Length: 370
Image 1 (spheres, rainbow, N blue to C red):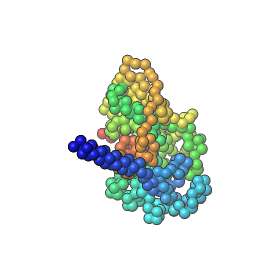
Image 2: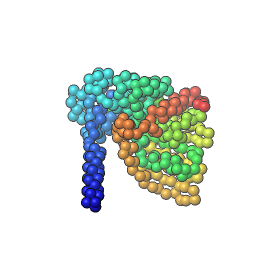
Image 3: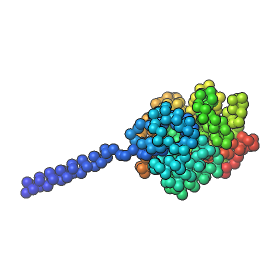
Image 4: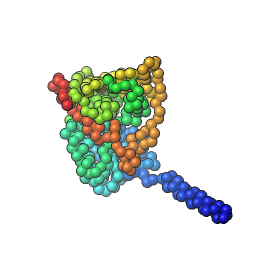
C-alpha cells in the first residue's frame, strides 16, 4: 500500500515539474518584435530614437514616411538605413509595409492628420508632445482613436523621470497632506541657441505648426504633470502671460510664458521659457504638511511634518514604466491600460489648458473652464 502511495506521489511530482517546466519555457520564450513605422523626420527627437532604439530586439523598423527627400537621404546616410524603407506619405507606408504601430515625429499641427490616417488602418500611435495645436484638433484625435479602436499615446521626457513618480507617490500616500500649490519649471536657452536642426527650428517658431512658442513647447510638460497630480481634474480657471523677450530671434511666437491654474483648494504655476541659462525640468509640490521638490530625473528633496529636509534618490522605475517604447508595447499587448501622463484622456485636458492659456495671453484676461 505504501508502495502505491509513494508511486502516486512521485507521479504527481513528475507531472507538476513537467507543467512548471512548460510554463517557465513559455514565459521565457522571446516574443516577436513590434513592427514600427515612423511618420515624419522634422522633429529633432527622432534622433534619440535612431541612436537609442533603432537596433533594439524589441522592435523592427519597417518603414519611414517623410515627404522631404533631402531629409530622408540625410537620415538614411547618417544611420545606415536602406533607401527602400522610405516612403513619401503615411498612407503609402501603411499600405505597403503594415506596421503594428507608428511613432510620429512631425509638426504638432500634423498630429491630427496622422492619427486620422492611422485610425483608418487600425494602427496605434505614439507622438512626441504635445498632443495638438488646438482643442478642436485634440477632440478630433480622440474621436478618430475611438472610431479606429487604436491607442494614442503622447511621449514626454518627464514621464520617465523616477523623481516625478516619487513625488506623485508621496502625494497619493498623503505624505504631504492635501496639495495646495504646484510649481513646474521647464525650459532652456531657446531652440536656436541650443542648436536644433533647421527643419525643427522652422516649425517650432511657426505659430500655426507649433501652436505657440515656449507656451506650447514647454508649457505642455507642466500641464501634463499638474493634471496627473490632480487626478485628471480640469482646472477651474487658466491665466497666462507671454512675452517676446527675443523678438529678433523669435518674432512670430512667444519665448517666455507663465500659466496659472486654479483648483478648488490648490493653485498651479507653470513656468515655460526659452530664456533660461541652461536646460531644466523640475517640479515643486507643496502640501498642507510638507513638500516634495524634484531635482532632475532622479533626485527629490522632501520635507515632511516635524522633520528636516532630506534629499533622496528616487527608486528606478520598473519595466514597462521606465521608457516610452516599453510602455507603448505593453499597452498594445494589453498588459497595462494607458493612464496618467501618456494617456490620451490626460492630454486632451493638457491641450484644453494650453488652448485656454493662449487665449488668456492674447486677451489679457482669465479664462474660466468651470
